Image (cartoon, rainbow, N blue to C red; front, side, top):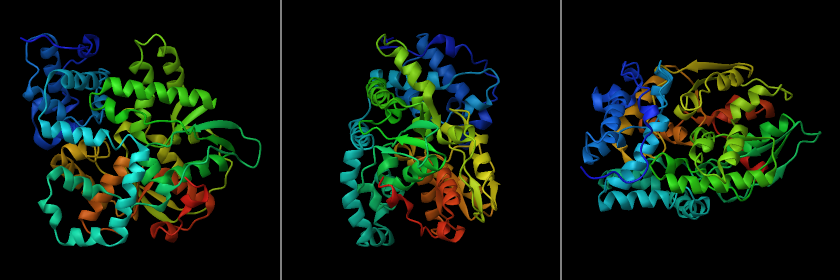
Length: 445
């Protein structure tokens, strides 16, 4: 058998799995297909066989690992405390080093990684996309059903395209201060997709933090966090991004770091593990990760200072997998939303099951992602909610796409912090449901 190139998943993590099967009903692909090798237990068995030299690293092995969404629901379900994230990520890196992909697959992945982790490139792309939408070309294109003639992955990219906001072309203020003495100096991650296609979420985050008497610092030099690369087996590229991110926030000299994208947060909290073998960065990475908090965690720890005004609407809260499973943050967003007067919070059935977004999974495996997205929308609609809220841009894109596919263009999808911001500012439910507040322009993000 050919020698395996590069580091392998550590046996101390592989040996934690006792194959009890508690992970099976939590795993999206096992729920869909009932295939043992497409469950966490089955994948760990295959990993162990490959590491022990008893099974080849081949296309079959790669397929079952590629099928994994990396949602980490298995970690929540596991009674043995298996750290599946520390298995699937190095396994994917192992695959990228040892199992060749087709030329078309390599080119598509290069297209994604040459675009999504680069906000400047996303802004350049946003301009023709804005013209495509505002000139009515998108509507004509979709009505003509020409999307059916596109390759499945390109069709998925077009379907997931959000409405390009004018805020995509603004630049973030470096520092935003409250009117009174700040009680905390907060560094804020601006994100890649978030800052270009969801600037209103960043703006809402800044306003809420300032309303709670925090000084907000947005380092201009911050790069991509590296999440997409890490989750796709590109460990070296992710580590390089992590070092740049750490240096940018160290220079900002902040007390804590607020993150409003669940996928980014789960990766940034693991920089200490990612750079554990780098003597120059290991200690700095651990210190950085210790400062990272999801925006809901941070706000839950601060005694509220800003008045919450009524927001009479029924909202279904969708748990982002990398928030509830990878970070273990579930109650904090619910408590914050529950503190808004007259807002009724609805629970979505199968709340622990992934919506199908999973980083770039919905681009790489659109058919599986669509099945999971449709299932999530079915559960969402059963709540009778006026709107849906989540804590991750990928989830918001997936949910909006699923709602559009049902012809439900009037059900808005919000980031949790947008609703909190609306309550603090006194924006009405009617304005929110019809998207008439346009708040992102106020802080030029």
